[in-house]
Length: 626
Image (cartoon, rainbow, N blue to C red; front, side, top):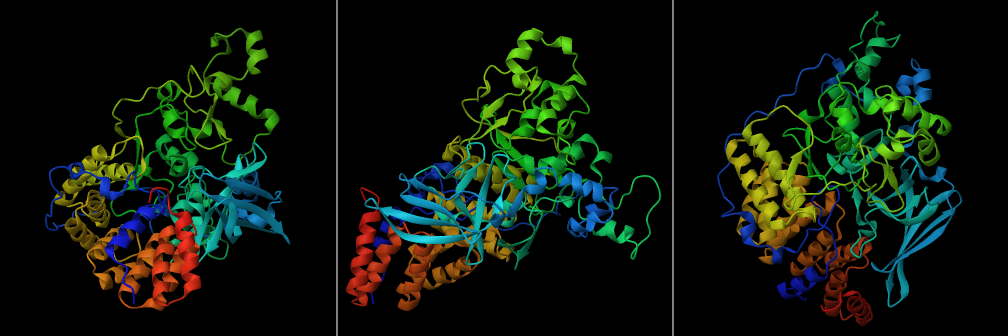
């Protein structure tokens, strides 16, 4: 039996092009752990013993009866019987088409080659079903084609459609997107780089929250999700309907009299802040979001302030348009600041669709409800000729986004010197809380700030790792010492220790995270991920296998299957090792590390054909210079 030693492990780690499983987007760190400086953590990574946790932050009271945790989602069809007109009007909106069955689309077949990443993709339709295929490009030829049946499509089609497939019980995003504005297939947003995710980006219930109406999490695992109601429905804005149905259904309860019906939220009865929270639950996504201690990603209920459940952070505005940057832009407008009523629904009716012919008139009338037409400095004739007399042409121009082929309307109402904006970011980006919120305890605020800085350290190129990791470490330590330490804090400290190369502190903090959270959460799996690599590096192969066995049950990650296979081989479980390493290759066929490991394993079996194949593939896929 051949043992896979640490020298080989270093070669494998250098070769791997796999993203970390820490977080929904699964983005790789800005640099490998070996390059981190211990100075990034500050003076030390403290090992303070666990302190008594404070009570969870309290939620504000609400008059609406369906805002509590006992409210259940019943589905939009339950609303149709009593509200047929509202149902029909909503079905004309883009929200009602946020997700559909892919087989309902009749899109042309296509082939897209991404030479920089070494992949070739095809979209095909046969017998009314859509499939996407992926091949790796090796020495100029396409090899190892894999077929992925498409399950659902995401997006109303206004700008495009993205697609999800299913494998091993997990949903993954396809690297191919249909762009309606260009009427063409191309790489999905974020996939146009050499280290793109291929079919490895696993989609969790959290990712689906703003695209699917109702989802069910299986076995407490956000990455095992069943889609119950495909598109956004009534309850996304009105809240869970069980209380309302029980009160009004003719066979269950009696219909109430006149006045406000508090069994369900009607956003028209809310303050502007609470109305906007309904929209912000999906349309406010900036640099990073952090859940308030004790809350889950889907805990928010319409009628409540969003900031009671999560805090949204951004870096000081750079003027770059993002897909969901509308909230920040609107709040930076003088029109918004000087008005007590201007909000999303001033221009956007969630229950109606204005015809294309009437749309610009509709928007113009919204502006003229506050501004006199004579206030425009442009001559009427010039205005009519150049801009068709549309206020938004000058004051809310179409702006480029980070998504290829797409330009959205800039929501910072004002005088724009260019469509890309004129804001100049500071030399050192500042962490900014994007919404006013009730003050939390110092420890809970430190927890929020620390997790926000950590997310930015791992995902943002705008902030240096040392700066953000130091801020994260200091804040997370303060949260722990102050009584707001939870599994997220402990897992965050373990990740910082891993990135800067302090294995003893990885084990300490990861152990705390595992003690605090027994569910397959991001905190637990993040702690297991860094802990397993430390255990492997210390030749604690049984412990590493135990960690990896749990990880590979609840996540779909080629790197973790690779390490599991190497641990199994070192434990003398060669057959299991081969299966695990082949599973790693099935997830990521461009992974040279798995081929290196399989070469060593098959050499012990004296399987010369398998040795030649994997040795040849490893050589061809290994990055130059390795």
